Length: 336
Image 1: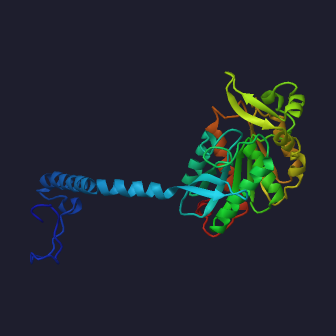
Image 2: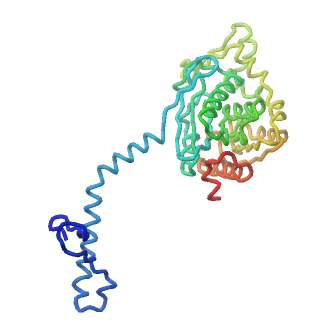
Image 3: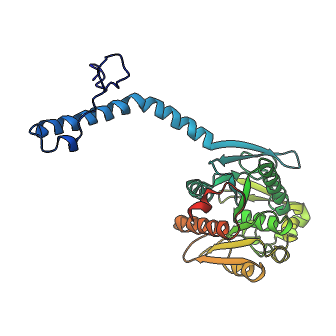
């Protein structure tokens, strides 16, 4: 044994003595010295364990910091209008990827998206949260409508990761992000699963609540309406062009245009005060390959039901992987 470290020297070291293994509890059981040796053996093991922890603690902390930096990366993608879209990629060993889309006046840091991203990473699935143009860190001007413009942003994101050889297994969108995901699926048929969380079916509804009574007359006259908060502070401007874009976006037609090869899940809260739950049933009537789950008592933000929401999203993605596996790197498939 080394006099300083307490480590047992192998026979190859320069002591010239043959290697004598430290006696185990089994080898000394029944010996008259067993009572003395057992505590000594236990103490020696504890000392060695503590010594290793102390020696490696700093290196381990540094390695874990580096690992976290690798697993979470800021990505910038340019859309067709030359605007830079900023997102966060949660990278794992698998190349399977889920794209997460935020809702109206939200950002990639929305708590719903964060919860889903964290759950996906635990299942060894990459997740990408990004800001649509004009929102969060992304370039561009905030727009009230322009649903198809957000579909263009989503197309830029899909193209980027496809070129990077990722297997995009699903698009998940909350509220207006759910509309973007469904509209994307109706136009581009390259993503096998879509999850629509509280998306709006009737886009001609819910406008008066934001713009006030007589909004059509006022916006036709002035060309815009400035929306203010309860304290009278300016929030955003709605132009006639952006309003007409919303009114002319047909979710009925889009729903019917989604091919049956694409699996769609709609999740909605029964107490949603922003988008009524009846909209979810309209999607269920029209989308060919559709599954509906209404969470009883949940509101638009799923304030008390975020865990249930996250579970349902993950469950649907698992089912999608079993029914329609994509790519060669899916570790999730091997475990189910």
